Length: 338
Ligand code: JFZ
Image 1: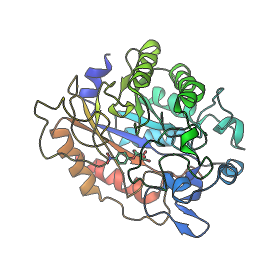
Image 2: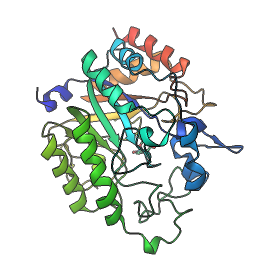
Image 3: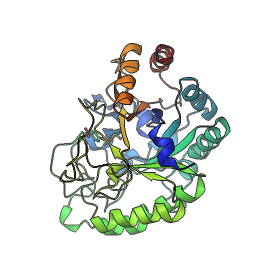
């Protein structure tokens, strides 16, 4: 089936933020992050040589792909989106392009992305992947150094290990890591319903187009979200937890294509809002500000009535466990939705 037609009716999906940051749970050496737990490396300016140590204890023995996918399915979700690589630069799949990945660098040694893909196909959910195509704190030439707006950490790029922004050249990172890895996720994990790119600033129009071409070359049916940058997308990701007041009118073409939030022109009229269960995407052990079942059900209803899909995030802990309150509230929300 054409993914555009599928996406138009998908309504509800699950996103998962899972990575090395999940082990820290939002706290590092006595400092608690005030914002997103997956930003902890930047928030605490953790040097790569210290951050790399997390690989030695990344061993989520309770990770069970079937359990997560069954939960999503039980709750009426049609698709599942996993962070294949977040801003920390750590691949949650077996990458050949970079050894900084879950199979080669951790005692766990299992391809988490592959197990999730398989469980999705088995249970009839569509599978999509998040990939941070610009920010990569593990890389000296990771992007974001051209952006000086405030962010959830000390800087968008890794300015603590790699200080001299003048010397940075994102083109190199793009050629040496980003493109090879995007190729890997497009060829190793079956048919992806979508790729969820994030936070474009340094990426050039030519590079966004190149990524778009790469995706379409391997998987013509795979949808691309608007955070690929520079307008090279199939559908629009609204802001995090954003519930627009009313459906988009026309005349949105003038919008800045790299704005993270807000309506912008959507070539096929496809929209999605990703939302958090509490106030972080990645696991934050002291964050108990869970959305109530009523709020979740209400959000879904409002968004879907505007033709916007709701991609609801879960942040498992370092052992691979979904927080029980998040699971409970999600299950109760699903009952209310029936
Ligand atoms: C980005 C990431 O930096 C974050 O870690 C998470 O993955 C999230 C899904 O995406 O953060 C954003 C992006 C856009 C907005 C806010 C946070 N926005 O539009 O309001």
